[in-house]
Length: 343
Image 1 (cartoon, rainbow, N blue to C red):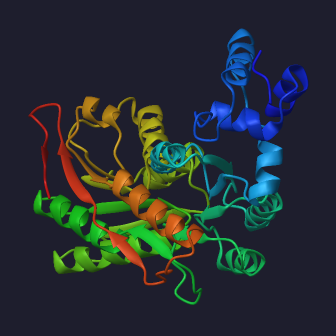
Image 2: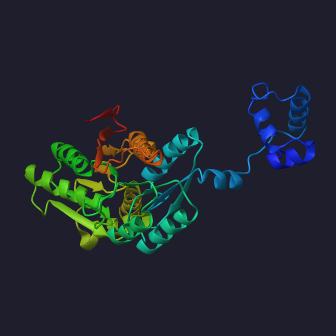
Image 3: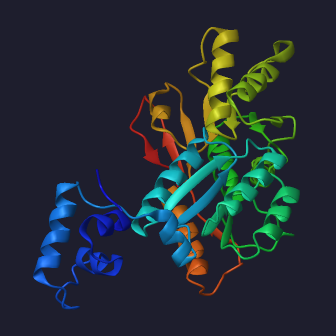
């Protein structure tokens, strides 16, 4: 079993400093005897290596070597992918990424922020679920490097990085309308969420430009972003025996999954001629028989910008509070023809 520096010192009789220098390969530089080097290295080899006492190290360095990430929902594919990229980047800098979910609950979000700060994280990444909880969290994190992502609150002064939600909505709505769809239903959860607000605005503006009336470009919303929320939206879509529109656009993959489940439950199957649009991409979309348009966010590019901004603050370099907006891609998928990027 690997031993700590203190345990090696107690067993071999050499000082912690001598042991540290030997283990760092600096024995000759500091004229440590061959016998001392041999004894220490043999002891370490016999016990499977050595381990660093992180608590002692953190106290000495006044750092925790951790980064906190508060997300709204760990089940959301976008955030899951973002976490994966950020973990790799943190690991390369000898940092550990700690993640927790607010569940889109402002009180839980503030508790999560306080918990991260209580653990002394070196940096904090937040996808805020409300301006009030985010503002309160910022006040408590005054001395902690911080980056806000995805949800933009103009009245809050903090470094912010996000995809271009408005332009994404414009791109996908335009392509669906160009496909000849005379009616489109935007189905979304959390309509008060800033990113969803931008998507709704982009949808409505582009639908009007395409000549669709508000009745032909309808927005249905519920207060939750989940599979169950999607089922509720699917039921609303078919309420009172309404005719299914030629196209639907879902605000998330979770909502899309619920909508498709509800359509299959009520109609027996998802109509193969239904044009489907969704924000965020998953490879399983390629197995749908329908024509699908999907907005693919640049999770790796977002993660790189987020980590660069956070690391700059952690290294006490210049902090950029100008919003950074990352472009997305529109992808066209269809099992009947080879899929291709649409923009």
